[in-house]
Length: 310
Image (cartoon, rainbow, N blue to C red):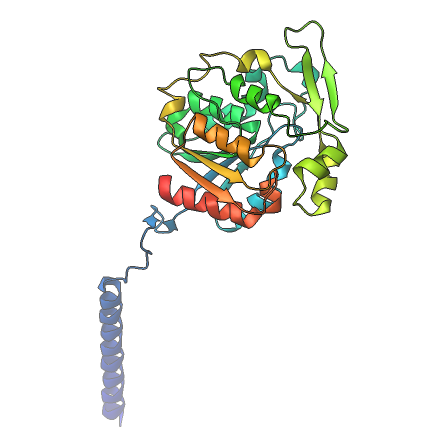
């Protein structure tokens, strides 16, 4: 009887040992089986093994506005997995500086330069400048040409190198396409060579001339958040501000806003003819604030630009 029990125990032990051997062999085979390639075409694989098609977009607002003006576009881009830096230039948005304390264009654009200076070596961004923000973008191209894959002027001022950048603005001021400044406020400093020190868009002017294709709540928001803007005419009149070697080496793309009443289509095309960019895109049904009136269309343009040039 005892002998039968011992034989049964031996059989159970042998069966357990065989099962363990089969388990180890299966685990070894699973570990050495080739893994399927799940990286999509056009994507790169990071060290962690995750595909990475993320891009970094740096958004530069126009006068009297702040980084807040990009809230719709920033949401779309970040929701798609991209990094977005919607900065406040000095004296704008929630930046604590006051316009009265800013005496040079360099001081005004310092936050933008700080963002670009922090970009790791070898990385490049898509930088977007709107309206007067095109001047800030241009100086960024001059200072950091190797960190900008594409500079996008979204109905923005796009000056020509080796000439006074202010000449682009002068052309705008000479065109009589706005009947009046309506309720805009101007501030003058008699002690300056160019006495116009700052200006603020009025609510009626913004709603009628700038936000004419936007939902009314966007114009209301702008009226509540508007801050005075400087012109810095002495600085942007410097003919050596932009060079062919730096500013001229960066890929430029211009986006025309077709229903813009501030920078009319005719004026935008003059800018393009005066200094032809690499590529021109057009958005129908958009006003001066195309990031608010045609957000999805602008987002699509920027993603196409990033795919092509980054």
